[in-house]
Image 1 (cartoon, rainbow, N blue to C red):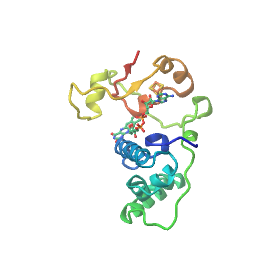
Image 2: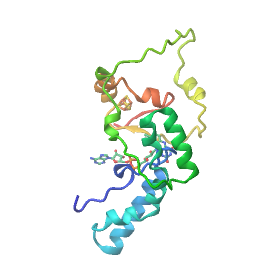
Image 3: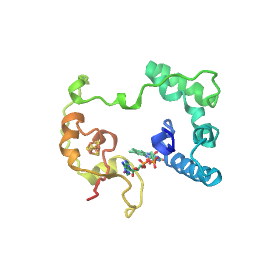
Image 4: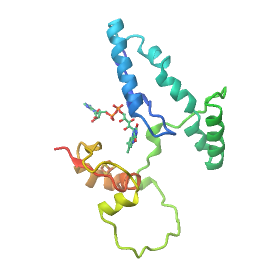
Length: 177
Ligand SMILES: Cc1cc2nc3c(=O)[nH]c(=O)nc-3n(C[C@H](O)[C@H](O)[C@H](O)COP(=O)(O)OP(=O)(O)OC[C@H]3O[C@@H](n4cnc5c(N)ncnc54)[C@H](O)[C@@H]3O)c2cc1C
Ligand code: SF4
């Protein structure tokens, strides 16, 4: 895209095995600013990013997530290999498109896990945070914002069954309005 500079998550710079992306977002943002300040143009950004420490870090872990597309055991063995060799494999495995991974519930058949009916009382939010074993300051600012919380109780419930409940059971969401 002429004139555009992709940085952070929009450029897919998250380190997936670590699930860390804020340092990559900051690094690439600073690098983009330096590039424009030094050259006066966005041209050459792709090559600049690819030659930077940002991509050096991702190169080491590039094969780890795609390895799990071939099954759990292959994925684990492959992750061990890629970690031990710091990504020095001469090959690069293909990955699926990120957006294709989340299916709508109407397209998904729930697996039968033979779960036992729980007799425990439902946990409130504070208890869920306690059981998730997170550690943070009580007055830490909330960093996860939902721009339009109406979607949470309408479209997201109908189409996706609120997946964030499974990802972050103790998360605190704040209405931005
Ligand atoms: C649940 C969760 C937990 C995570 N935990 C960690 C962790 O512990 N450590 C870590 O390092 N990383 C973590 N990450 C990853 C990290 O949050 C991201 O890699 C990082 O925030 C990416 O930063 P970014 O600036 O590229 O994008 P974002 O932080 O997503 O910022 C993009 C911004 O653009 C805004 N925006 C979008 N569209 C428009 C528009 N049209 N006009 C104007 N503004 C717009 C959005 O509202 C948003 O504020 C986590 C991610 C998730 C989802
Ligand atoms: S995943 Fe969670 S935060 Fe996102 S729209 Fe659905 S309910 Fe809201």
